[in-house]
Amino acid sequence: MASTRQQKHADLLTLLLLWGAGLYLRLTVMVAPPLAPLISSELNLSQTATGALTTFPILMLAVAGIGASWLISRIGARYTLCIALLVVAASSSARGLGDATPLFIATAIMGIGIAGIQPALPTLLTEWIPERIAFGTAVYMNGMLIGEVLGSTLTLPVVLPLADGDWRLAILMWSLPAIIPAVGLWFIVRPRKNVEVDTGSWMPAWNEALVWRLGILLGASGSLFFGTNAYLGTVLTGRGEGELLSMGLILLNGTQLLASLLMFWLSRYWIGRAGPIIGLMALGLVALTFFVVVPGIPGLLALAPAGISAGMVLILMVGLPPVYAVGNQTAALAAGMFGIGAITNFLIPLLGGVVADLTNIPGMAIIPIVLYCLVALPLARGLPPVPR
Image (cartoon, rainbow, N blue to C red; front, side):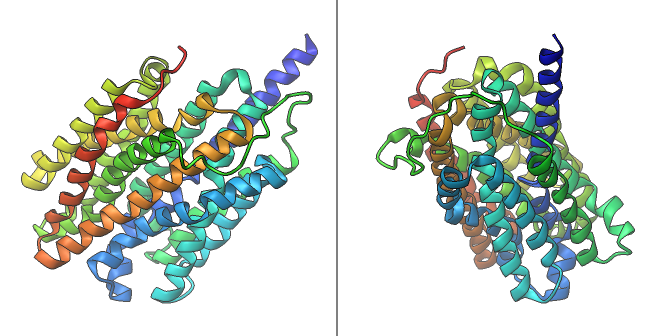
């Protein structure tokens, strides 16, 4: 009985630290949109470069994701996760050390660190708590979504005033706490003994359709979310509504918490099914279009369903690798999926920025996002069935 109680306490601590690691899948990325006007003004950045502050780390996930899978096969998911968190803490803090060049170099390194976190988390679930994979996924994804909310909604009203209006210090204050889950996972948590895991190849199976389906669909939800965050401030400022930026960020990102809570209940019914993915993405596209077309508060309120739908689709997609594979194969599938999704999450919003620059109409940035999502959605019908 005592041993069982100790194991439950150990599992609880493990989940808490994995939740903390999940925070840094998005927290340091989502600090950029609210600070973008300040950074752009001080460093004289274009609309495309300003949007890249949010999307550039996502591109690095594609560059470094396979390397993370290889590292997991060599030193294990636990130490890979700890090292990745330390890299995120250091590189994200360094974004405020200089002008535009050091900013983008540090942003790229931060993306590499996040690339190590992404496949390590689902792999650890198959190794440490294999009987609670669905719940574990919901836990660290809740951490990720809360990280999005904290970074996007509290930066302007809370952290920036604490930093005396200095955007560089505000970034530092958000970045350094990533050390906490890294230290806890390295020194405190001990994995279970006698848990067998798969030791398959660390390389994604690029010749399998599943990797591409997952990656393209993940890229659709990510393009909707990151693209909207990247150009929200630009769209509002362009139509003279810059004072609504804080409210818009809260509506878009704060609703991610509601999405997370709903998916604690709905994920076991919806995961692997095409209907919910297609329906939620369609809702998000309609809401985003309404926001761009309709000015004022009515259009701003449409950001709430856009945020909810993007968050729910994200959880449905990220929850699939640990139920389709185990051990190193989970890391390989996740790395492939995140890699393809990351390239899309960078290129599609970036293309939107180019369109906005060429037309000098900020709202035109959504055109590539909408077109890509419409092309990607039919792929949801080919997902393999998932045991309930």
